[in-house]
Image 1 (tube, rainbow, N blue to C red):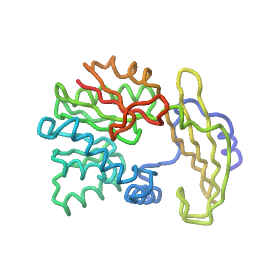
Image 2 (image 1 turned 180 degrees about the vertical axis):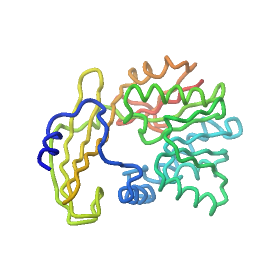
Image 3 (image 1 turned 135 degrees about the horizontal axis):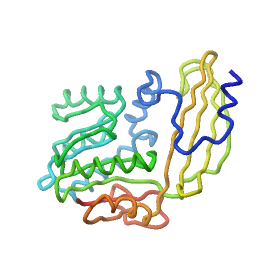
Image 4 (image 1 turned 45 degrees about the vertical axis):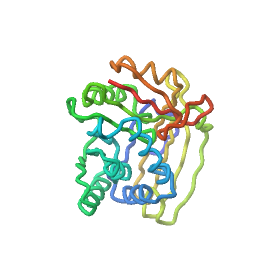
Amino acid sequence: MFNVLSNYFIKPELYAPSTGDFWDDEYISKGMLEAHLNPDWEAATRKHDFVEKSVHWIASIAQPAQYPQLLDLGCGPGIYAERFRKAGYAVTGVDFSKRSIEFAKEQTLLNQSHIQYVYQNYLTIDYIEQFDVVTLIYCDYAPLSITDRQILLRKVYQALKPNGKFIFDVSTNLIRKAEGRSWYYSEAGGFWNEKPHLCLDSVYQYDDEDRTELRQSIVITEDTINCYHIWDHFFTKEALISEIQPIGFNSFEIYGDVAGTEYSDAGETICGVFIK
């Protein structure tokens, strides 16, 4: 076990993958679903009162009468998707968590909201000019490597109809953490594992071309060691525009968040609305 652990005590290469399953882990996915559904948490979904404001704003800048078909990437259990449907959109949701998608499908049947949910990695979508709006909310763009971001941008551009809008948000440098390490022991029932486990947490910063942060959690049980990597890339307004524009979008608007707050250099998030 110590030989395995020693491999984790050096700074990982940029965008090195996790060794343990995350989105579809039987135990972790339960906690993630709980976090999504709690209206007062900002762990997996933003607080639900903000979600309401966000949907209202999106429906005002891309009115369902003109932009009826909406694709919600990283839809989770349908927190946004159900509200988009109530606002008047025909909604398709895509997510890579089987548990979240199963919950979302149960809810759309219960609510008779007729949302189409797809269990799929959104890097592999292959829609062609099918949607008027594509959303990717709660900074889900930023954990991707530059290679995967370019793949996703091309997929989104292809999925949009002419004049369609891609609406998403990213984090700024203001929420970067200091590098450091900490650890804790959980008897049972922690986020990462239901068994007694030790968790070694580290934060690494990458300050070359990428303004990128890694939050690493090494989870040790009596029988297993799993290493989880949560990446985040931080943007300036200029860096975001320069990354997106070459894909071919005709115009863009920049806001402070996905509820339409005015952009400020002092903000923690940036919302981009890129128009095909």
